[in-house]
Length: 259
Image (cartoon, rainbow, N blue to C red; front, side, top):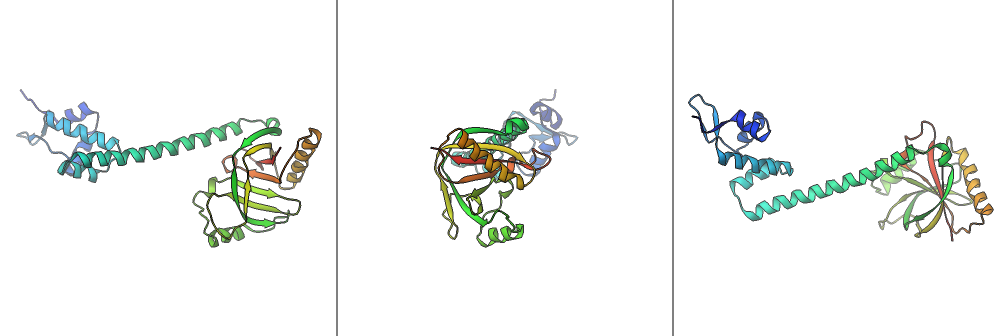
């Protein structure tokens, strides 16, 4: 009676494909216990243990090359080092996915808000925020995207995540400044700091830039009617995460610090 497993039986036992086992053999990670008279690969208990260990390491996203090194020159320290590296990588991926989950939840929350719900005033507690001013202009904002691109390149601003960055506009009586959040110590930029505190928030939908002036008037009318004491200038934010929530126009938010 045959006492070893064929490659097909081994694959079925461990719920993998025979192709995967052959691949591991090709890479020198495992070899059959013996070959039958007809040339069939045969495997024993020890082969199951070795293959199970390989599968655990592969599930841990440890490269084939590293696994081979562990099998050829095993030491407890090298094994721990490989597992630790995988642990750090997995932890970073979990953190990335948690961030993505929060972003998706935010988008879904906004997507479910009706237009009437949008045009609402709320009090928010916001953290301390530091901005660098990219470009200041009058309210015509007649500069081109190429001008902004050249500033990013000249000033060596990292644009790798620009597609998901919120844009902020600092509004004064005389001009409007395009800003981005930045905690670094980059030189050559005007810097703005908005302290942690309570802010009057007014989120709304606009179809074109001209409507922004009406929204600015709305927030100051609200402060006058409700006797809200304000401090500082306005910040207008446009969220990249909600850029496709509306078919036309965009969703923006005015923020005004209150006492």
